[in-house]
Amino acid sequence: MEESFKRLKSETEEISEEQKNIREGQRQVKEKFGIIESECEELKRETRLIIQRSARSQGN
Image 1 (cartoon, rainbow, N blue to C red):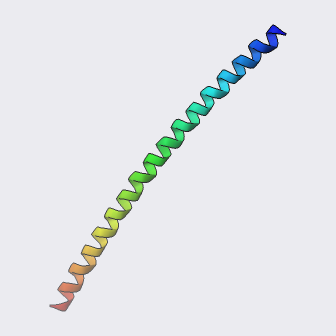
Image 2 (cartoon, helix red, strand yellow; image 1 turned 90 degrees about the vertical axis):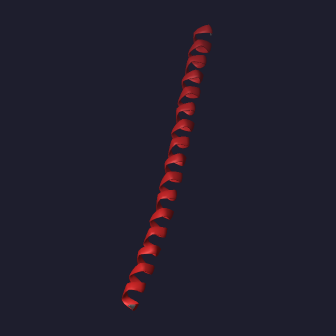
Image 3 (tube, rainbow, N blue to C red; image 1 turned 30 degrees about the horizontal axis):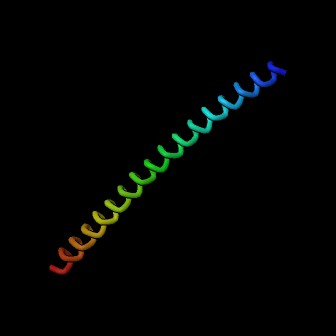
């Protein structure tokens, strides 16, 4: 019986560690998506500026 409890405790600790690793991985993915989203917005701004400049030079 004690052997079963030790095994169960060990498995529970292992699962807890795996869950901790999963949460950390999810946090990192969320952070990376935030960075990608920010870069995407910057590219959109730069594209709009290029289009505006191009339109002005076409108008001349």
